[in-house]
Image (cartoon, rainbow, N blue to C red):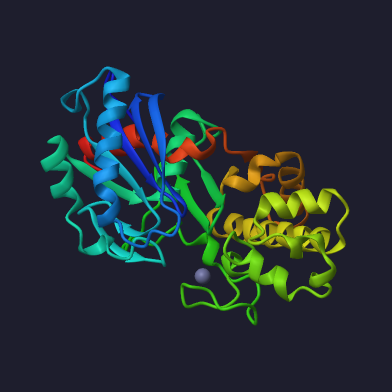
Length: 321
Ligand SMILES: [Zn+2]
């Protein structure tokens, strides 16, 4: 992908609990800030704060909006990058499909807008500036509130005819008689081991009331891993189960897309020494491959990965993709 000299962009990453905002110049993040979106179901209510934040980040970076090529948004849902439509949301920013976000970007910043699925934008970022530099065939899994995925094949993002391809990896079935998922399917990886489903699993785990986890109001992966390390039996068993779900999910993704690399991102990768070797070993043992084994890597850009995807995403439009 050819990207013009000094391409600058505004970027938004609409996550489950926060909105990441950034100003990019090529593969450098000049300024960034995170807005709290915990519990917010409406995006319209957050837009004024987003506008103010982007303006103050531009000031911090010493730039004007007119020096940027556009605004890129990573959105947690099904989007069509070709016309900027948000087709489907999942329990977050439910009003987004009705909002005229392109109109907002024009009115507030006089800039064009491009919207992509958040996991796809994160993978674009990792390929452009992170763990996937120089690699043309990558699957990324983002383990967070949900499980996002994205796929780059032959150097290009896989999108599919309806915008679904490659980004629903977290909704591949790992347990056909498992938990009901928000998406309509049963036993998705996301329904079996994600930020939203793990506390539900924990409460149903045999012996949970005797576990130190029972004292935590809303246990997340940080608590799960900490309590497991301290030797709590339930936390240890739950952690093992989550690792197996993610590893099985990774095998399915490798079987589906034939990547050279699997990038793992999201909050869970704060503990890469545990997660990466587990998934790598599981892949080595359980994938059918004629050429070798896909390499498992930790995302290099942390929570900012999607922001780094802004410049290549906007450049793609200019080059007619
Ligand atoms: Zn699902």
